[in-house]
Length: 195
Ligand SMILES: C[S@@+](CC[C@H](N)C(=O)[O-])C[C@H]1O[C@@H](n2cnc3c(N)ncnc32)[C@H](O)[C@@H]1O
Image (tube, rainbow, N blue to C red; front, side):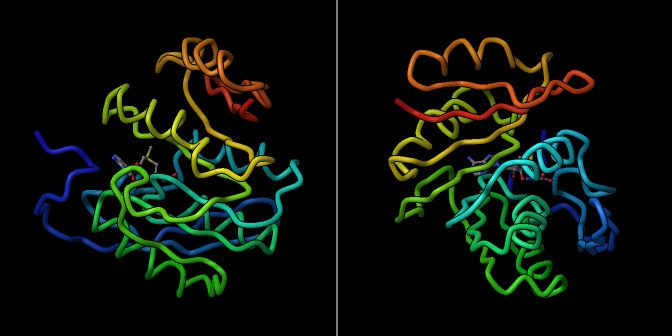
């Protein structure tokens, strides 16, 4: 069975979607074989809207960026530098197109299986993690983020109550200060500062 995150040969069918957040509109190229190709995922939208009330600065890493919505939108609101990574090559191709499409000059996208190609530390790591890739991958993204965050860095992520939100919060509490920024329609937006 092919999942959206595998580099399979699903036939391409490019389309453009329009996403409005607050007063800004973005255009994203999407395609078959990538996550939430018909429109911005509700969890991602909830994550973005919650993080907009935070004070985001410095350099940000969007893990599992898909076609690049979270990183490109945040860079536009906060005027920050953003790196975006994904294991799906088609998603990275689209993310690069979308950087140009939205004139996101301070954003770049590159292929990486979890953090394998990441060589620096960030002020913020943000993710809507790939639940369908399994708990091991999700936990590596969440727990290993500590190694790629500066000392004062923050991890933000979104997870549904039916996808293990409460267990993730309990487990992260062992190694970080965990705050639930928002609970909305089953989605938890979580902020972690590692010990
Ligand atoms: C829930 S989707 C979120 C996509 C995008 N951030 C959005 O909001 O539309 C999770 C993403 O993680 C990616 N992914 C899955 N396994 C991964 C891995 N091992 N390393 C990096 N990214 C991965 C998937 O390809 C997918 O794009």
